[in-house]
Picture 1 (cartoon, rainbow, N blue to C red):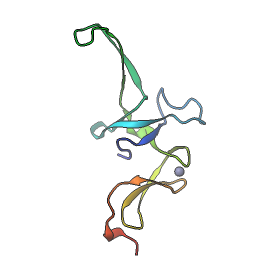
Picture 2 (cartoon, rainbow, N blue to C red; picture 1 turned 90 degrees about the vertical axis):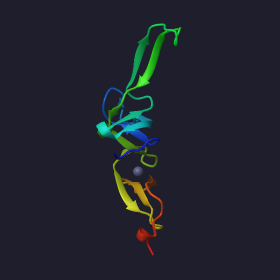
Picture 3 (cartoon, rainbow, N blue to C red; picture 1 turned 135 degrees about the vertical axis):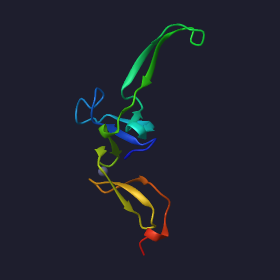
Picture 4 (spheres, rainbow, N blue to C red; picture 1 turned 45 degrees about the horizontal axis):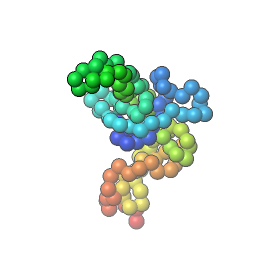
Length: 121
Ligand SMILES: [Zn+2]
Protein backbone atom coordinates (compact mmCIF):
# COMPACT_ATOMS: atom_id res chain seq x y z
CA UNK A 1 0.00 0.00 0.00
CA UNK A 2 1.30 3.43 -0.86
CA UNK A 3 -0.87 5.29 1.64
CA UNK A 4 -1.31 5.01 5.35
CA UNK A 5 -3.87 5.96 7.93
CA UNK A 6 -4.12 9.73 8.46
CA UNK A 7 -2.48 10.53 5.12
CA UNK A 8 -4.02 13.27 3.05
CA UNK A 9 -4.82 11.90 -0.38
CA UNK A 10 -6.30 13.10 -3.63
CA UNK A 11 -9.05 10.96 -5.10
CA UNK A 12 -8.59 10.63 -8.84
CA UNK A 13 -11.51 8.44 -9.79
CA UNK A 14 -15.15 7.92 -9.03
CA UNK A 15 -18.13 10.12 -8.27
CA UNK A 16 -16.26 12.32 -5.84
CA UNK A 17 -13.21 12.95 -8.01
CA UNK A 18 -12.46 16.52 -8.94
CA UNK A 19 -14.98 18.19 -11.19
CA UNK A 20 -12.32 20.71 -12.16
CA UNK A 21 -8.62 19.96 -12.25
CA UNK A 22 -7.93 23.16 -10.36
CA UNK A 23 -9.42 21.93 -7.12
CA UNK A 24 -8.28 18.43 -6.30
CA UNK A 25 -10.60 16.30 -4.21
CA UNK A 26 -8.69 15.61 -1.06
CA UNK A 27 -9.48 13.89 2.19
CA UNK A 28 -7.89 12.16 5.12
CA UNK A 29 -7.41 8.39 5.09
CA UNK A 30 -9.50 7.00 7.92
CA UNK A 31 -8.80 3.33 7.37
CA UNK A 32 -6.63 1.15 5.18
CA UNK A 33 -7.90 -2.25 4.10
CA UNK A 34 -4.81 -4.00 2.73
CA UNK A 35 -6.64 -7.28 2.16
CA UNK A 36 -8.77 -5.84 -0.61
CA UNK A 37 -6.51 -2.94 -1.54
CA UNK A 38 -8.99 -0.32 -0.47
CA UNK A 39 -8.97 2.75 1.67
CA UNK A 40 -11.66 4.72 3.45
CA UNK A 41 -11.27 8.44 2.89
CA UNK A 42 -13.03 11.04 4.97
CA UNK A 43 -15.90 12.62 3.05
CA UNK A 44 -15.35 10.49 -0.06
CA UNK A 45 -17.79 7.91 -1.41
CA UNK A 46 -20.27 8.75 1.30
CA UNK A 47 -23.47 6.80 1.35
CA UNK A 48 -26.60 7.41 3.35
CA UNK A 49 -28.28 4.62 5.16
CA UNK A 50 -31.88 5.23 5.97
CA UNK A 51 -32.64 4.00 9.44
CA UNK A 52 -36.02 3.11 10.77
CA UNK A 53 -36.58 4.31 14.29
CA UNK A 54 -35.35 1.65 16.69
CA UNK A 55 -34.76 1.43 20.40
CA UNK A 56 -31.12 2.37 19.95
CA UNK A 57 -31.91 5.11 17.51
CA UNK A 58 -35.43 6.32 18.35
CA UNK A 59 -35.27 9.15 15.84
CA UNK A 60 -34.41 7.03 12.83
CA UNK A 61 -33.32 9.06 9.86
CA UNK A 62 -30.27 9.15 7.67
CA UNK A 63 -26.88 7.90 8.69
CA UNK A 64 -23.94 8.86 6.57
CA UNK A 65 -21.02 6.54 6.17
CA UNK A 66 -17.93 6.46 3.99
CA UNK A 67 -17.43 3.40 1.82
CA UNK A 68 -13.99 2.14 0.83
CA UNK A 69 -12.49 3.22 -2.49
CA UNK A 70 -9.79 1.38 -4.44
CA UNK A 71 -6.32 2.34 -3.28
CA UNK A 72 -5.27 2.69 -6.91
CA UNK A 73 -7.58 5.67 -7.21
CA UNK A 74 -5.95 7.75 -4.53
CA UNK A 75 -2.66 9.57 -4.62
CA UNK A 76 -0.79 11.02 -1.69
CA UNK A 77 -1.28 14.76 -1.57
CA UNK A 78 1.78 16.98 -1.85
CA UNK A 79 1.35 20.35 -0.14
CA UNK A 80 4.00 21.92 -2.34
CA UNK A 81 2.54 20.76 -5.64
CA UNK A 82 -1.01 21.18 -4.30
CA UNK A 83 -2.11 17.93 -5.89
CA UNK A 84 -1.86 14.17 -5.59
CA UNK A 85 1.53 12.93 -6.70
CA UNK A 86 3.53 9.80 -7.31
CA UNK A 87 5.80 8.73 -4.52
CA UNK A 88 9.37 7.70 -4.29
CA UNK A 89 11.25 6.29 -1.35
CA UNK A 90 14.69 7.30 -0.21
CA UNK A 91 16.89 7.42 2.84
CA UNK A 92 17.44 10.67 4.65
CA UNK A 93 20.86 11.81 5.80
CA UNK A 94 20.42 10.11 9.18
CA UNK A 95 19.30 6.83 7.62
CA UNK A 96 15.54 6.98 8.07
CA UNK A 97 13.37 5.80 5.21
CA UNK A 98 11.28 8.59 3.78
CA UNK A 99 8.61 9.03 1.17
CA UNK A 100 9.02 11.90 -1.22
CA UNK A 101 7.19 13.61 -4.01
CA UNK A 102 8.65 12.58 -7.36
CA UNK A 103 7.57 15.85 -8.85
CA UNK A 104 9.08 18.44 -6.57
CA UNK A 105 11.28 16.27 -4.37
CA UNK A 106 9.89 17.37 -1.01
CA UNK A 107 9.66 14.82 1.79
CA UNK A 108 6.22 13.43 2.62
CA UNK A 109 6.77 11.70 5.91
CA UNK A 110 9.09 9.16 7.44
CA UNK A 111 8.45 5.43 7.15
CA UNK A 112 11.04 4.19 9.63
CA UNK A 113 13.28 5.31 12.41
CA UNK A 114 16.81 6.45 11.59
CA UNK A 115 19.09 3.52 10.93
CA UNK A 116 22.82 4.20 11.01
CA UNK A 117 23.29 1.47 8.42
CA UNK A 118 21.77 3.72 5.78
CA UNK A 119 23.00 7.03 7.13
CA UNK A 120 25.09 9.17 4.86
CA UNK A 121 28.50 9.99 6.21
ZN1 LIG B 1 5.39 17.85 -4.74
